[in-house]
Length: 226
Image (cartoon, rainbow, N blue to C red):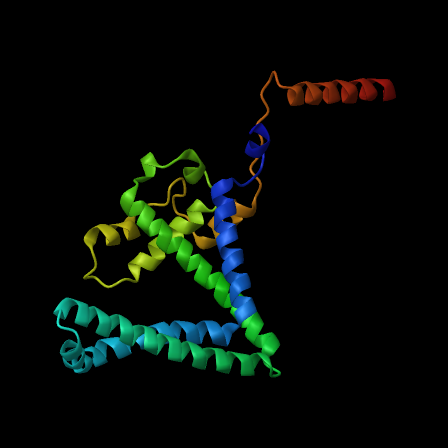
């Protein structure tokens, strides 16, 4: 375990990086068009279910006597049928794009889209964590993570953009100071992440002895040259 403490990042940082990389690679494999249309398909299925539910509800209740079961069947059935249909359309369009000259651009934009999506997932997960576990009660590997400052800063900027009618406790996150990062800016936070932490050497450690021996050797060589 001592070897792990010498690394500039910890297990939390590795998890964040893994989330970004996995999301980016999946989006690159599927392509930008597929990812965007897939999200549009979910949104479209929700809208179709919402607007068609009142019209299909009466018909389903004629077939099923229990109203609750009839309503659930109407809502879930409409959503799934619409989602499957839109998914087929999405896959068809995506295959045509990948078979064209736009394949390289589609995959490059998909990789970028995946990074952004992964970052949003991490930020939203942090907001949920902050609502459940206060900063003082978090494990040390979370509080000491190199990526935490950037996540906190991004979460704060995202919450500021949210509507005013949201839960006040959620919006309060947007005014929280960044832990150990007063007056932080995105540039400063990124620079802090990529800059290796200086390793302090204890006076009695082997590193301290080696450094002292080197100083003695330098002084001896200097006296010899004089």
